[in-house]
Image 1 (tube, rainbow, N blue to C red):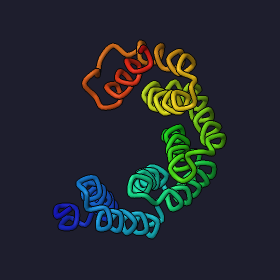
Image 2 (image 1 turned 45 degrees about the vertical axis):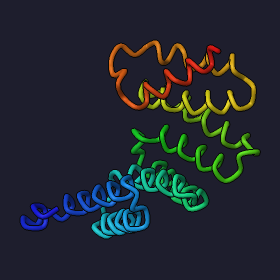
Image 3 (image 1 turned 30 degrees about the vertical axis):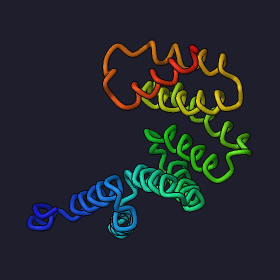
Image 4 (image 1 turned 90 degrees about the horizontal axis):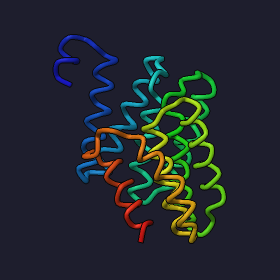
Length: 187
């Protein structure tokens, strides 16, 4: 952050400020971190830059959901998806739909139909883009939902081939979570 400020790289300074806020929030300082993230997003928009704003909004929404504010998360994700539709910056679209489903489930765990629809859409987007990482994340979330609704076989049948297509990265959080879920589903 200091170097970007010293050298007048205003866009990179905003990005550094966002990541600083994200790190604060991830370390447990949610209020300060999310305020920093919001400020950086506003600054980025103030510079007239929309590139990566949906990504930033998605990360902030994830923090909001984890902090117990899924309504704010849904609002942020709605904004992010509107920007995606306007700009066609779709590389993070599947994850935005997955995060929307997580926010929906956090606010109404008993009403999962809309969340399942978001996850199904996210899965279709990831597959269309051949984005296996996003596909794995979505499939893990959908498999969890199905497990919770006594659709264990469907959950396993969805997740197993996607997980099995990976040949490396098994020490990453996402693959570890998928492996643990598959082990649970095998019981």
